[in-house]
Image (cartoon, rainbow, N blue to C red; front, top):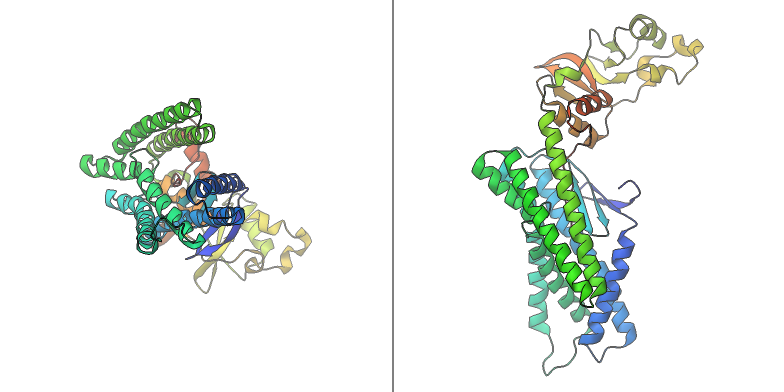
Length: 383
C-alpha cells in the first residue's frame, strides 16, 4: 500500500493509514449514528453524531490493537514486522519471514482475535455493570462503550472463521501443519477452505442486497471478494516458495577481496571494478565491515576527484547484514526486503565468501517460479 500515510510508531512498528480508510470511517460512523438513533430515543442529534464519530475512531483503535497483538507476538518469535496499515477492510500487519513451527503461526494468528475478545468482554462487563435501570437511555460514554464491546466480540468471532487468510484460517493452517507435518499441504487446505468461506460471504451479501439491506449486502460481498483474492494470492506465494527453495549460492557474487576504508576511490575503480573482478566491494575499517562500495558511489563525483576521495568517505556506512552461503534464497530475500537492504555479506561459517544483491535474488526468484511472479514476503494479515 504505497500511498499510505505514516502516522507514527508503536513498539518500533511503523503505523500507517491508507486513504481507503476514510471510506470505512464514514460508513461506520453513519451506521453507528443510525444504530444510536434507533436505540436511544432521548439522545439529541449532536449526541448521535458525536457518539458515531468517537465510536468509529474507537473501533479502528481496537483494530490497531488487534494488529499490534499479531505483530508484537511475531517480533518476540524473531519475525521482522515491516509495519501496520489501517485500510478500508480493517488492518494488515506486514510480517516478514517464514514460520519455523506450526506453533509459532498459531500463536501469532490467535493473538489478534484474543485481544479483540478481551476488549469486547471488558466493554460488555462495564455496560452490564453501569447501565441505567428502568429503561433509561445510557450516557454518551456508556453507549459508546457498549457499541465498542459488542463490535469487538463480533470482530474476534468473525476473524476466527476458518477462512484463510482470516486468523481462523491461519489457526486452521497451523493445526493441519502440526498434524500432517507439511506446511504446503496445510496452505492448500486452508486456502481451499478460505475460498469456500469467501463464496459463502458473497452469497450472503447478495441475499441481503436483494432483500433491501443494500449497503450491508455490498459491504459483505466485497469482504468475500477480498478474502477470495487474498486466498488466491497465498496459494500463488506458496507455489513461488516451493519453486525457489534453492541454496543462496546460486545468486552469490564471489568476493576475492575487500578494501580498506582509507583506500582511494580511483585505485578501487581501476584495480577492482573496471577490470571486472567484482561489482560490489565490501569495505572494512579496523578489520570490521562498514558497508559496500560500487561504481554508483564513485560516479556521484567527477572522475578527476576520485584520487582525492577515500572509499569510506563516499559509501553509506552501516554494519552489513550477514547471511550464510547455505541459506535459502527465498528467506534471504524476504529478510533483505524487510530491512530495505540492497546487498548482504555472505559467509561460509565465519569466512566472507561473497556478496548477494536484492536484484540478483529477485531475478533468481522470477527464473525459478512457475508463473514468473517474484512477489515474496509473508502475506499480510487482513482485518
